[in-house]
Amino acid sequence: MDELADKHIVLGLSGGIACYKAAELCRCLIKHGASVQVVMTEAAEQFITPVTMQALSGQPVFRSQWDARSAGGLANNMAHINLSRKADAILVAPASADLMAKLAQGHACDLLTLLCLARPLQRVPLLLAPAMNHEMWAHPATQRNAAQLRADGVRVLDVGVGEQACGESGDGRMLEPPDLLYELLRALSPQTLAGQAVLVSAGPTYEAIDPVRGLTNLSSGKMGFAIARAAHEAGAEVTLVAGPVALATPRGVQRIDVRSALHMQAALQTHSQRARIFISAAAVADWRPAQTQDEKIKKGGSRQAPTLSLVENPDILAGIAASERARSGALFCVGFAAESHNLLAHAQAKRVRKGVALLVGNIGPDTFGRDDNALLLVDAQGATELPRAPKLQLARQLVAEIARRLPG
Ligand code: CTP
Image 1 (cartoon, rainbow, N blue to C red):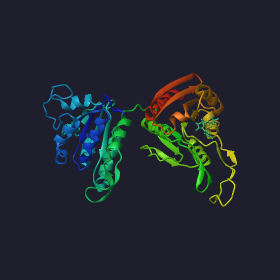
Image 2: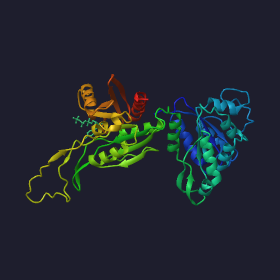
Image 3: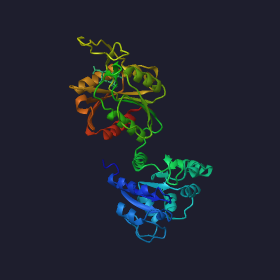
């Protein structure tokens, strides 16, 4: 996806060995459709050359506040103003301890600090990806500067843990390019769910027959995981209760793994106590074996095939939608409907039966396991179609639709 199409990113590099990762980051931003203007400090040039960054970004690198070239289309010799006005975001990666100290103090001693100080505060987000030795990161001065920068509205990103270039080990590694790309996308997303607690269920459930066999379904969890990511991008604090799926946890999302419908119900009931929104995207098994055998059921010699006796699982969504919090409006519930035919009629009936404000219909066989989907949103006012698109794109649209319907 060209997620950064039409976005102008200023990529700032300060001095640190993590400059080598900035080369890959630059490629990654370009690949996602951004135009990238690289700005380097003198110290950064000790680690990577402007030639490399120019080749990767396709634009000459700015290195000095005295650079008289035209910047951002203007030849007024004010690169710090022009570059920061043209930018949709400024990402400094790596951000050294020294650069953070300077920014925290409001210094403007080179082009990078100058343009960070000159950025329009409300319109251009500034992200810093710290990279330094773990002792430097943990030092009270650096932590004090990070706290001051956060209070000033700068997005100081977290750091990775592990082996460092100096041979020591600890906190202070710069985040990897895919994580930095995600943080940039998040900074550029409309914060429609800022600060809201969102609970999402995803994936199938697995109902054990014996220790090695069970009943499950073809849900991949991709839609629910995409919704969790989209809600986090929109500023929510997200808890994802996931059935057994082999998907990576979206960055910043708290994940709780469960197996059976009963496990899922317990986790969702607990977390729905403090959620503002519950999105039930899981394909919960409707039935489970009446009894789970402790030992593997053996075929034996001439034994007949065993008969499975099933009992119905609780309807988790209907239960939560009937809770006091949901009925009082404190919890906004969104259901899904996986159907094979008559989507509109089934979705409308299911919305009423489950007692939810919004129900999202989809055709099960057309979505399970796929990377794209098409959705039909049904609420008391009628139905809205979200045409076939990648699941992440649909998830972002769905989050916007939920935010629009959220009371208050
Ligand atoms: N759901 C649930 N608990 C269940 C079954 C479903 O919470 N035991 C939730 C799903 O997460 C989804 C919605 O209810 O949000 C509808 O699920 P779906 O499988 O489409 O419907 P069912 O209730 O199973 O009804 P039917 O099988 O008759 O279509």
